[in-house]
Amino acid sequence: MSCLFCSIVSGEIPSTKVYEDEWVYAFKDIDPQAPVHIVLIPKEHCANFMELKDMKILSYLGEAVQKICVQEGIDKNGFRVVTNCGEQGGQTVDHLHFHILGGRNLMWPPG
Ligand code: 5GP
Ligand code: ZN
Image (spheres, rainbow, N blue to C red):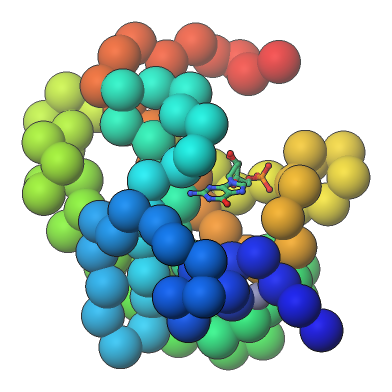
């Protein structure tokens, strides 16, 4: 089964890496919706939030969010972390990912 984000983790498809550790990989979104727009994924394939079985992965993602926000300079002014799940959630790539958005005032509620 081919998966776009698995291909990004393997390097088969190029990406602009922002952060990597044993468990997670983060890269710049190809279609940024804010001055900072990073996609953070677990290296191991998981289709979406509801498919996540090993909740340790959530803590690895959480630690990475903190590090990335400091690294990208959006920790002080604020940012948004969001995961789209399924059709009505607006998910377009079926590999669990968190969007990290910042660098401007973000609207709420989202559309
Ligand atoms: P979703 O819509 O599933 O929540 O988020 C998928 C995100 O992946 C979108 O924001 C989209 O712009 C981004 N994306 C899709 N294909 C690529 C790609 O090939 N490279 C990068 N860097 N981002 C991608
Ligand atoms: Zn995948």
